[in-house]
Length: 134
Image (tube, rainbow, N blue to C red; front, side, top):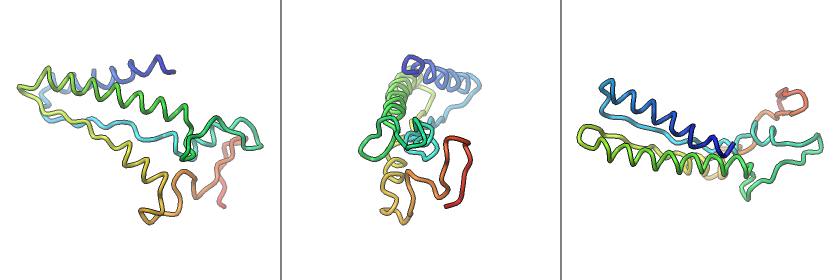
């Protein structure tokens, strides 16, 4: 999966290039949000019914998925900067970095007046992929 990250970022930039070629001059590119902290991803990382999961980080997010998200965002940022420099004479392009804002919201929900962050109001069960109210 790690090897595919540069291709994913390149595909996004290919779309940006196509937009520019069609006349777009003001472009916003958004980074990927912290999917590793989503309840469904944490549940999907579960190995068995006992609840054992792939390694979680200190915030309770799936470490491998988070590492891939951060790698993607880093590569995407480099590509946006390079594109902006190449077309600086007629283009305004910005990377909207929402990852850290969203991660803080998901891992510190009480700080923002929410009850749930990395866990869902509805519990996901991996065995049947059913969602039940709790």
